[in-house]
Length: 111
Length: 113
Image 1 (cartoon, rainbow over the protein chains, first blue to last red):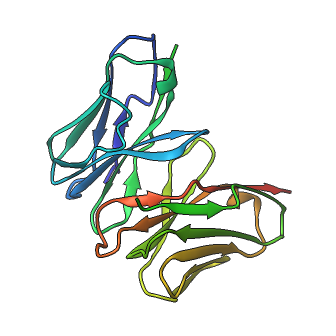
Image 2 (image 1 turned 45 degrees about the vertical axis):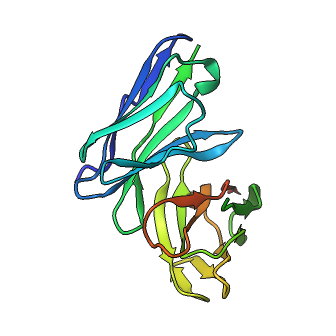
């Protein structure tokens, strides 16, 4: 198994642009999580899905952030419009039975 | 809401010294997990503790889960430079062994050769 796959690994974009981060969870996992990691705030849970259904999106910072999981093998996190304070590493993780497997992350820089 | 506090935030040790990081929850947990993140990497699962008072060992690493299932610790004996990284604890919601995890802020360990 290739593990959790995220793309792109790095993204540099200008303020105001739309950014889409992608995640392919491990096959058979029924939970998918989106986290954001910064030096200031640590690892923050943004949203998580169970069986493709969003369960808790209370961590999504504002309406500029949205996430979808159209099927069990794909999820996206979209930021529109992006702002410099969105610069961070975004991790996707999936789990089955509690243990979480993280992707390698997307390092987003908004200039 | 549920919070998981972790201390210390940073720890610098000489190679060969011991290291301990502590995790405390505001509520009773169903389980506690520990992850390690190397610099520039992603969190990687180390272990899960489920039972009250449980102690598990992985070579030089010892993990404990408190009797009240509200605290946990990770102890590394005789640190090595390969132990460098950030160690996170993550608590599972009471009543569930699945679902979301509440991560601590992590302890960043630096080991001097």
